[in-house]
Image (cartoon, rainbow, N blue to C red; front, side, top):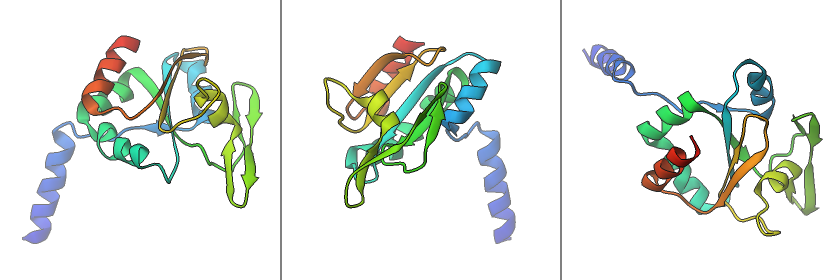
Length: 153
């Protein structure tokens, strides 16, 4: 009986429109842009940033936001302290260490630097040619993020 209830619950979730945010990689977006042109939203975060975690756990769990991002944009969830090299827009970006187990990725600096500084969380919106059209450095709740999405569509 317990298994049946779980199965019914899971079927109910999938048929009520519940969906998850489709996060892509920079490399994947590069190839997707050749097939279908869309704006890209890059969420730049770090593991130690409390506001970044709050946005991930609230704003990016809002079903309206998930649906809008999945349908109208490519979304990239990017850790600014990522250590692997990333090729994007015909350029390779690498992690730049600045001390013992401390550093920042060149791509995070490229996309997230505002007024010569980088403050997390960062939203960077790229047009269909992967050019920066908007940078925003601050926590956004779901209501404010929806307003921002409407403006950039």
